[in-house]
Amino acid sequence: MYLKLIVLFSVAALVTGCSTGTPKETKRPNILFIMSDDHAYQAISAYDNTLTTTPNIDRIAKEGMLFTNACVTNSICAPSRAVLLTGKHSHINGKVDNRFPFDTTQVTFPQIMQQAGYQTAMFGKLHFGNNPKGFDQFRILDDQGSYYAPDFFTKNEGKINVKGYTTDIITDMTIDWLDKERKLDKPFLLMYFHKAPHREWFPAPRHQKEYISKTFPEPATLFDQFETRGTAAKTAEMNLVDHMNWAGDSKIYPDVMDKLGLKPYMKWDISAFEREYNGMTQEERESWDRHYRPMNEKFVQAYPNMSREDLMHWRYQRYMQDYLGCIASVDEGVGRVLDYLDESKLVDNTIVVYTSDQGFYLGEHGWFDKRFAYNESFKTPLLIRWPNVVKPGITNDEMVQNLDFAQTMLEAAGIVPPDDMQGESLVPILKGEVEKVRDAAYYHYYEYPSIHMVKRHYAIITKAYKLIHFYYDVDEWEFYDRKKDPYEINNVYDDPAYAEVVQELKSALEALRIKYEDSAELDQKYIEAYK
Image (cartoon, rainbow, N blue to C red; front, side, top):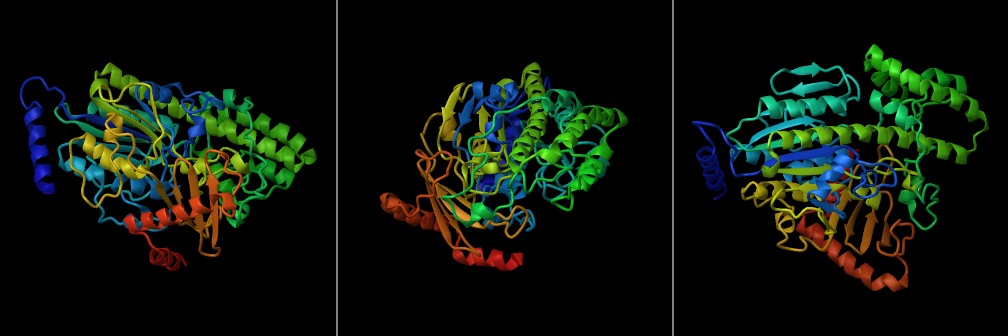
């Protein structure tokens, strides 16, 4: 039945498209899927304008739907992307962490859409595999990619190097494809995937002067001591003072590090800085030195008298200046692509999705990075515009996940999803036909012991509560009242007042593990395979 539907839709595409005369768009919607890397919802002004403004990304919310409880199944780059493409949890698609291989026998939703007559393309960061299935055209960054002079794996040109700033290059490639390669007799699926604002946060020359001089408000939990939480939070290596690199992250030049006796935290600290710096053109390097050398000189004067608290304040500001400077370029790129849709009269028949592969810590709990089931990394931005279908300016607080994207895109395109996908289509929510697709979300993180040392854990999350089980070298539970404790500071797992709710959620968690085919046996399998 499934293959029959694919054939029928392929035939329909040929019938509705114009093979003779003036080409015109098919009725099936185009899909522009925009994803950035590590873009915290706190750094999108449609969610919160405390830190920055993102007028172009906000425009998607104003003209569509903003999801305030969107979340991921596994807060780490490559696994999140594998979940997005397959509509299956990490333990099913094989990509449980950044090291384990993706199961290439898995069918991805772009493959299905391509077979159903969609023209498909991907530009930017994928982070696993150099030959993604189901794309008529692609140019994807080599692994993490770099901010300056990036290498791309391409569909037709092999591996290429492109000079310039990566965010702008990816945007240029996206618009160029729309302008020159898009087929007028086919709907398209276009995946526009930014590297930014992934570590190490190198802003474009045009944003350096503005952002390096800004001062940003600090989060309430910047100096969190984790008194009411367990081992996992206390042993994680994500602290701004203790675990950030000096050169790559805070942009202290290697010669200045030597002068002050500063040692790299990670072995790639200096090489990460030098890779970006050496990839710049002479003009780009002059801009960098013009703005970052004075900052280094001030730091040389201040550092000998700085307390640990002083260093926390300083490193937070340095982090935000570069991180938000990178986002400024992403927002500009999004605006350019949205403007192209307007100018080309594609806007009315194009679904636009903006999301990130996960959330990110912007100094909350003193941290950077992601991985935990705590809010800042578990939640992800999600904004969807669908003209004439989604009522503009709507906010939705349902527990939707990146697990749902594949089925949502397929249903929006009129394609019946395969039965083995594990998410839920969001189309009924977008159309206002239903209020929710699930009562609780399931989360599972695997990459331990590894960078940042976040312990393995799985969790169940509802709008009201969060229950987390940390396992492997610990056996600890944490429970949070999300309404009363939005910062997730107080673990009330042992509070008698919550005993009944905890037991109910434990049962619901076990039911979710069965539903999604996860188990203690699989936990152990991935522990053994990781060693």
